[in-house]
Image 1 (tube, helix red, strand yellow):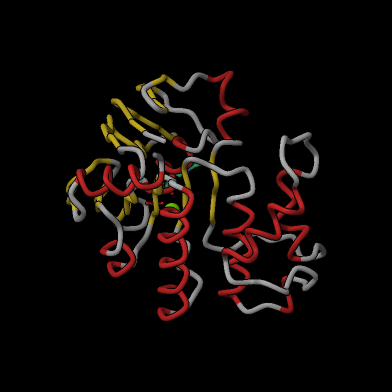
Image 2 (cartoon, protein in one colour):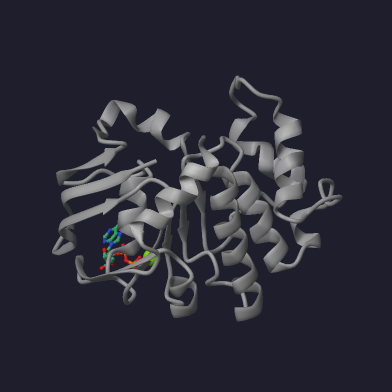
Length: 232
Ligand SMILES: Nc1ncnc2c1ncn2[C@@H]1O[C@H](COP(=O)(O)OP(=O)(O)O)[C@@H](O)[C@H]1O
Ligand SMILES: [Mg+2]
């Protein structure tokens, strides 16, 4: 899924969280959003995820303007991973993964997909466990599986390693990057961690609601080649 922000401004009383931000993300690219606390990283993720709307400017998805009445449908095309996992403590691992699709009619076998995703995140055999029986890294793996239940074209992650030690955080970012390849997703990761950022295809640095640096690590052609392999 390709994403573009065009002249996006988001204001709060007395403060401009994003100031006319222009950012284009090609389909299949993994982009790290870095910058100090308060720079506007989460605001970008919420806007791109359809959980918030700009005061001015537009968000485009695959070249189409995202309008207010498309937001519900748009949110279902997106996976979101948070710093604090946000699992439901009374539900099993399997039911946490299923939670986003339980209230809805869907065109696929929910349990089969949830089980496949638990395998993909390395939690085979843990479907009946409760979150409290898992380590932090394992809980984040459940959250990653849950984020993928709708086969999103775009994965948004807000400080996904922020509550984990560096070794486990590394495992989670490697998992996200490999799932991105496997399922052909675009990925946008807000992170304070320079090692996490360096493992992405591109690093966009925000400060005071503006982009102050934009560094490409993987050439755009290589990203296209990778997608070509995935989408014959
Ligand atoms: N709901 C809100 N109400 C008021 N100010 C907010 C709100 N959300 C974010 N902000 C402010 O917007 C700025 C950017 O916040 P945020 O996007 O969360 O930054 P980051 O994720 O980079 O730490 C900060 O100054 C923050 O305090
Ligand atoms: Mg934030």
